[in-house]
Length: 208
Image (cartoon, rainbow, N blue to C red; front, top):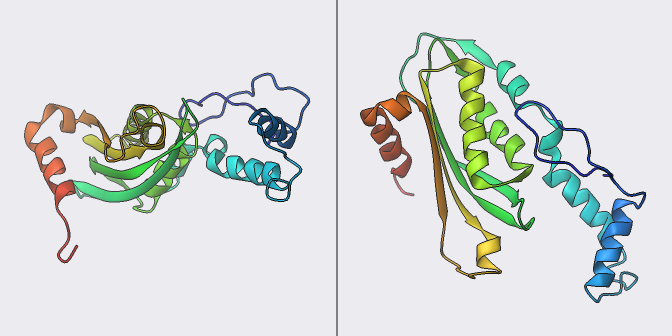
């Protein structure tokens, strides 16, 4: 992976910023040297290649189109009650320190003649989380993409996450969590709808 990329707008990637002639592996080796390590020792010899492959996987969302994903799985229905997909696992990289943050995403929408294939909502979350992110942007991107793709009566998204940049460095708080939300349409204007959504995502199935 030879590109340096800024966070992309919804549905497309950006052009790469200026890069040096050094390979990704060379840059990792230099970082190891600057950290005081020997990149030639046994445990680190293959690390540059592993880091390249890991970063390619963890940022693959730049190469995927979230709008096209949803528009390829739309179905016409007369259903107009709330659709909720909750407790969707999420892993991403904080753009400030490139350390992981992880947690769960809860998504709800009220259809307006069309619904999305249920499996596409976790895929949508994966696309946006496989980019350098901040939790606030991730939350709004999920909600706004669903709103744009199917024009429902409203969309609600809640993200609950723990950030290693808070847990491993800085304030070093091990049990703190960040909660963000984005409410569009009737989820923003209707208190009853919003309250129902928040109540349902807090319910646990029997035996859990």
